[in-house]
Length: 206
Image (cartoon, rainbow, N blue to C red; front, side):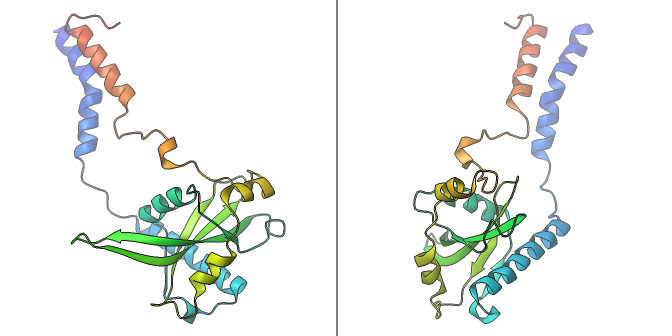
């Protein structure tokens, strides 16, 4: 009886993990989507003012989602990534908008690769990590050649921004490959459960 109870309690972490993995995906957080959209729109208007653009020069503003964040995390650590400040960090102690020319590549369902030149908006706040503020989509063909203009004047690198303004102002998050991916059920919990199961079966854990 005692062995059965011990086995039940030691297997409970694995059962809980299995239930977490089998759970259906959560419904989208509408409030978070509204917040991200407002965040992107606010910085887009800041972009218009600083670079003397009109809303007609831009096709659309794409707010931040998981895909945007993943692309941002990869792009900022690319050796050729360059940035252009949309404000003076010394004049704006709280937050600073800066942009980067970006080529967004996507594969469609037929395996065809498409490329779109967009502008990535980023925000740096003191004592906070740099985060994306969305993508600026340009009209087809980019008749104003805005992307080329940004690409020409974006001369700052990640290291130059950090060296010039300090890591407290431009605190770039580490690349995805530098962070251990934590699964829904932690490996430590699984190992602990397996070791406990071995002890119940009569094999003492080392």
